[in-house]
Image (tube, rainbow, N blue to C red):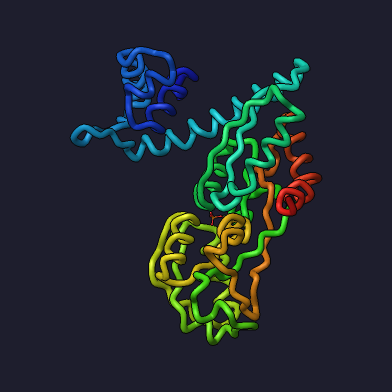
Length: 304
Ligand code: PGA
């Protein structure tokens, strides 16, 4: 295949941003230079990679194939760059981490503590749901991922570092708020506000109800923990969220955790990266830091 690295970089940026002007800005190139690189690439491959519908551009089927490849190659180049930086003896560099939206309630505390030790580190962070995290692992474009359930269909290294209990939440005036040991039968009479289908919280919740042989009555669907908490406060239904997302609402008594028999659903947070990945010494230091110090650090901040 007759493709240059420069063409791949340009193609990856246009494919990701779906916009020639923004890709040109990001790459510090002129827009005609970007268009030219794409034209040359398409002519080398003998297939169109983009199609324009109205003002928008989309990847063609060939474009999608090429895009996957360009992300993997970009990820590997970045990995090698980090390893080479470290061979040069630098203790600085970039750390690219993706975390589950639910984990982002505690993750900033971890970065802050890590930055105290490694001040010269630049952190790049993507906060997304489980589906987004699996896609990061597939394209190997991050140093590591913090997620609630390692994927089964890709080979990964994963290590648990913290408990992640899922609890049932209700507004304080809810009739169940004062009850003790609420049964699963009683819980089935309530309607739940669910996270979106790509969410790990949702998968855990559905599996748990299935294991208990219970029906899950669902009402609305919302794509963030914040939206769920607001909706529960407004009395639109009950919710199931990670205890880590609730610090403020419990403190201000805007929500309560219901005392349901089989709860909490016990899960863990994991550090995950692709099997065989060569972690840079910096990424390795972050991993060790999280595994050894996260639980203590977060407990300490909850006690304060
Ligand atoms: P999520 O969190 O629900 O935001 O996808 C990930 C998880 O808990 O597995």
